Image 1 (cartoon, helix red, strand yellow):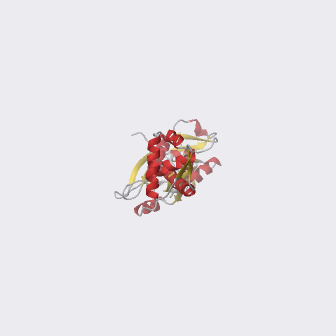
Image 2: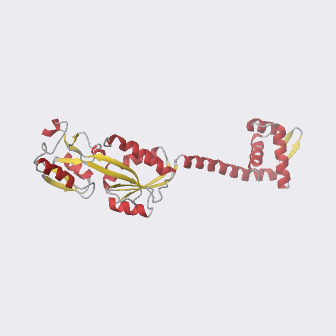
Length: 296
């Protein structure tokens, strides 16, 4: 059945006349009458009878009108859905990440992303970086965040290079310095992050090369916990700059030199084909991470 004929038929019934329907649809009255005649011929029964200058729907037409309305409303909903899907406004997005972003900053990015897309269902999976890389090989998520190193065969879509910053209480004696170094932190109480963000060995190496003592008084599995330890007065933490940006007013951040690069990768499916929704979230991640990138 011709969609346009059904639309004209419903409009005639809703408007109560051929003239009003033609005006609403932006076509001529003869075009509306011709469409109704073709539809009646196709259906094999009469849709309207004349009463003076008026046309009155038959009982069959009223029954057909109910079904036509359901059909056309369904097409309208389909059109809306197509537009939302095309604009990345509908669907399910599964994101796998290592614990650092999952605890400290990724929820805020995800929540802001979904506020503009109320039809989107987000699924956040927290795994170690090694597990995220393994899941990428079997297409278990749409996007994944993991720490380096990466093998050549791994589906890394984008690489983000960051650098550690020092986080310390605002009343700490070293807070007056614009930049902190191993020499300034010589023998200071340090809260280390191990096994979760990236290896502490590059920090220890920087202290060794400067002839300074790397005095670790606490080891935390996740950066967020280390930052909470610092807030409680346990010492100084060298953290990734994005997690450090989420700390409260009682802490301050300072650049650390020598610069200690930290690489995070955005992973996708093995074939590299992202959904429209995944591409939109990847762009949102880019925008959030861009201010923290190491300048090349």
